[in-house]
Image 1 (cartoon, rainbow, N blue to C red):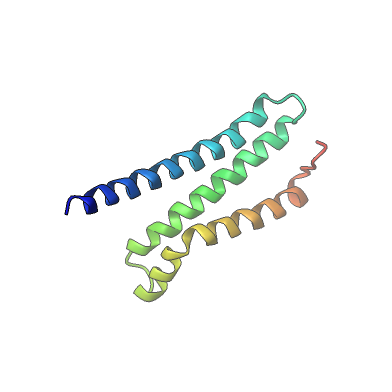
Image 2 (cartoon, rainbow, N blue to C red; image 1 turned 135 degrees about the vertical axis):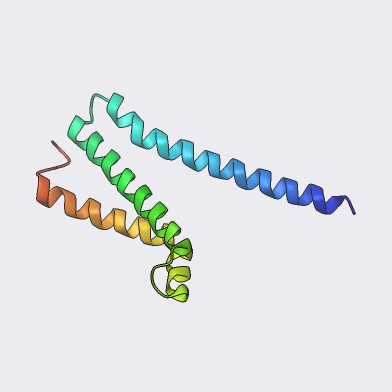
Length: 107
């Protein structure tokens, strides 16, 4: 009977480890371009802004699930797919940014 508690603990520990690894890897990809001399400061800053926009969109969309705005079924669907929608928003923003602010890969 004790095995079910160890199984839950192992499952939660593994999920936390995977989440920490993803967060550390993402932070490295955002921070390291600032210390790489082959990457311009404009590109490093643009990648940081894109990451922050994606993160903010994900947090805002997931918080929408608990807000009183709009019908509950729509809020739940948007909240459930918040990470996917946020990545889409980040991709659209990344595609929009160079055309409107003179950011090029060789900047």
